[in-house]
Structure formats: structure tokens, C-alpha cells
Length: 79
Image (cartoon, rainbow, N blue to C red; front, side, top):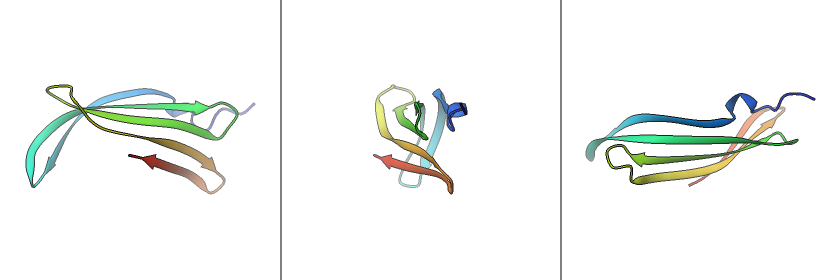
């Protein structure tokens, strides 16, 4: 049986970042991305959540699916 097309991405990934926009103060944040391959399907579910760096207060979330096709990879995102 072939390895799942998203096996290398599977798991929980965490990191910190910084953002800037001209209309607000610069900010720091943390992000967590979880990728879960769907067994026996060329799909993986993923979700991303961010939190304020200093306070840990939730800021943003999105989720969706990755799909492997003969033409490439498709990404479906829901905010």
C-alpha cells in the first residue's frame, strides 16, 4: 500500500510570529496547525488557530481540507 500523500505533513505544528499593518500597532501571536490525513482517501483535514502572543487570547481560526489530485493539490478553506 502506498504512503498517504499527506503523511509528511501529518501532526501538530506550532510556532510564533509577528504582524504589522499600517493602521494598528505591531503585534505578536502564536499559531497551531493540525493536519490529519483521512485513511484510504487522498484527503487531509487541517485546522489553524492563532492566539495573541502576550495574553494567549484566541484571535483567529480556520479549517479545511487538502486533496491530492492528478493535477496537483487542492485546498478548501473555511474561516
